[in-house]
Amino acid sequence: MRILVISDIHSNLTALQAVMETAGAVDAVWCLGDLVGYGPDPNECIEKIRPLPNLTCLLGNHDAAALGMIDINAFNHDAQLSALWTQRQLTKENNDFLSNLSEIIYKENVTLTHGSPRNPIWEYIMDPYSAAENFKHFNTAICMVGHSHLPISFELNGVKNPQLKTHKSDSSFTASFKNKVILNPGSVGQPRDHDSRASFAIFEDTTLTWSLHRVKYDIASVQNRITQAGLPSRHAMRLAFGW
Ligand code: ZN
Image (cartoon, rainbow, N blue to C red):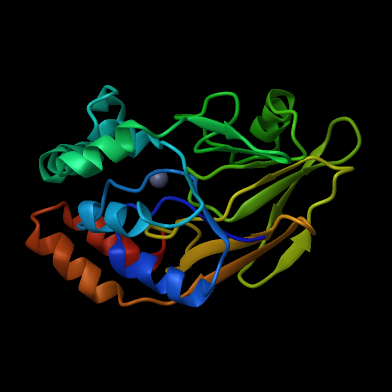
């Protein structure tokens, strides 16, 4: 199967559309959470994702915040404003959809979660140390996470010693059953690796091939909608710089 793996859409419909058009035909879509938060299109993004065939979708911390499931005092001020705005926007159907998402899902070879297998909603895996701890928390060959908005991977060599590998756009490698890996597809709607293009991955589950891709989208149109919605200007600004 050719599987589109996406994460951290963050209510950015223009980026999501660009990703889906560029990815082309896929057999399944795995979405690693944070469909909403920060951006101006929460309902539109959920409605684009909801009907996809063979969809597996996880709950992210911003989704939980939009549902009122977690204390948003853990968020910075601008993210709190965005979470409260999103709570007011969500339709009942879209609220129900988010309410039914899981924090962690185990497939045949792959564990899927938003933050980490150890702490699905909150933990960021951004360095070999946090990766090393998390390799103990899943039994599949592969674990896919989002949350950091960075398209990075960690490979466990031998018993310990995970290596951090930052994969630039369009690079690819084949995950092996010998080495456990943690893979992050980057963020669709708010990249934070100083590359403003939307990030996504294609996973071939027969060959276990993981390839990362980047696509340009009309950032100015999203910035305009953020401003019109009265959302924090910082969320508009950062899109242009990819941080
Ligand atoms: Zn996020």
